[in-house]
Image (tube, rainbow, N blue to C red; front, side, top):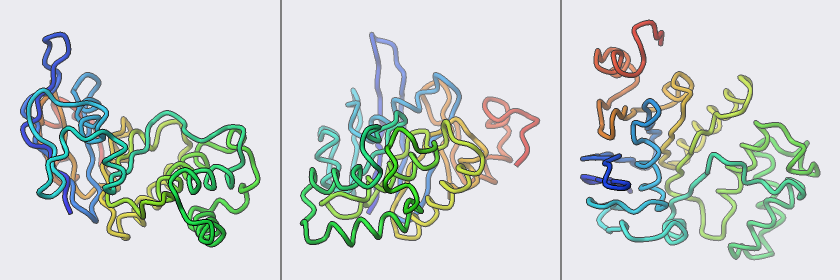
Length: 242
């Protein structure tokens, strides 16, 4: 399957913030959406999630037009979303955070115990399973949030949209999240990442889009972007080292 943005335009108060944007994400690949502040990447990302409706253009899931579908309907179609803002319930244990998603999304109770234990093991959360969400580290919180996105009764997501997954976590946790994203890709999940941590994002992406002034400036593999003089001039800087 593939998500495609086709000729996306969006304006606020008659000011264009996104123009002529085309991008795609396929299953089993990690794609970055990068750019300086004000480049339009957040608006573009929100169009993919369903939080923002474009003024013109289409969003496709394979051959289905999902442009007007809200986020919860996209979730039922296998498009998961992890917001930058913390979403773990601070006064519930990590175990109960996962169980709550099971209950809310209709996971059969007979499956709860096995699925819970599988997720705690896969995301290395066994030692903090009884710890309150407000007392875990930034990396543990991020792992919990990603685990929750895989905890629904809708089945594993086909795509996962990650907004600033490396924000507010230490370098060891960043490496941990990078490895986790690689494992999700190996499960044939397509992943779109937007993040201000350029190097950490490019280290795990198969390819990326660089935005500038509301348009796609360049796209390609990390090596291709590193060697692109326009990307260096307008985004990475001449001293950036890969």
